[in-house]
Length: 105
Image (tube, rainbow, N blue to C red; front, side):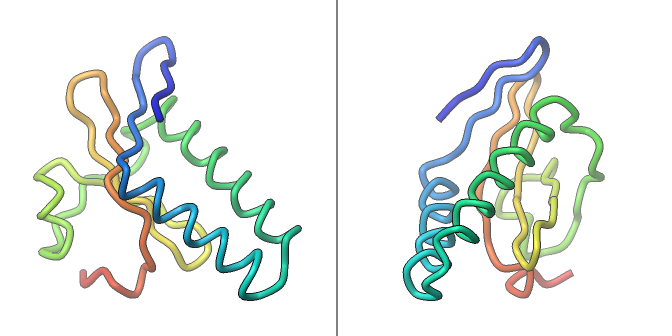
């Protein structure tokens, strides 16, 4: 999945797409809350658009658990989830979307 703005291209990894789909499916089917699942999916898309437009709005994170994604890794929280991304030139790369509790600061 890739979006392009005036300045930055947004690339969402296969893993991050799987993460979003699994999270939304869990809410929709396991929690039997399809309206909430749709709202969360829409919210994720809105956050991704904001990251694309203003990727430097969030500071670089140095926690050991995030270093596997590179030295320029950033984190945005949504509910109890964390969107992990990095910026390389004019490309914003979304690595993963995971429970915030999995990240050790």
